Length: 154
View (cartoon, rainbow, N blue to C red):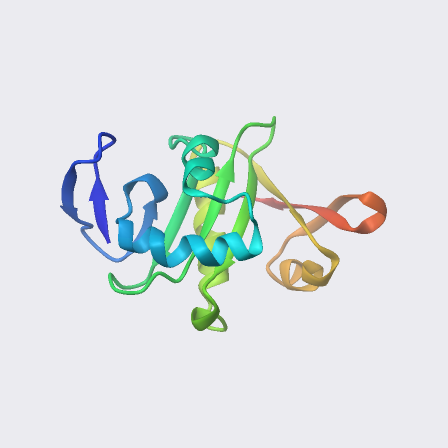
């Protein structure tokens, strides 16, 4: 992965494997991730991600446990009163290795660093048990139970 200036100029390799804001990731990292994201969420194009998560307190992270493999991504969104975590995705060949938990912990820590006492997310019913095992609590539902609002203390 490489880090880029806002104007597109190359700064150099990231100092260490780990998390990188989408806008700072290399084209290769984006090209590895975007087609798979689009299969899950058709609206997640490069243009949409850059506009929706400009950086700062609204950010879209790419996670690479080493500099050669993109494992997944997650977003933190403060466009509402509470910060919401969204778009948790782990590459199919990187699943069952704890990356989703690592991504969630990173997003929660980022939320806490902004001074918020808790974070929220929406999930589908088939993911409730997994999120509850991670410490999330039900806080509501929508569309007759088709999506659930979850909350966790930071």
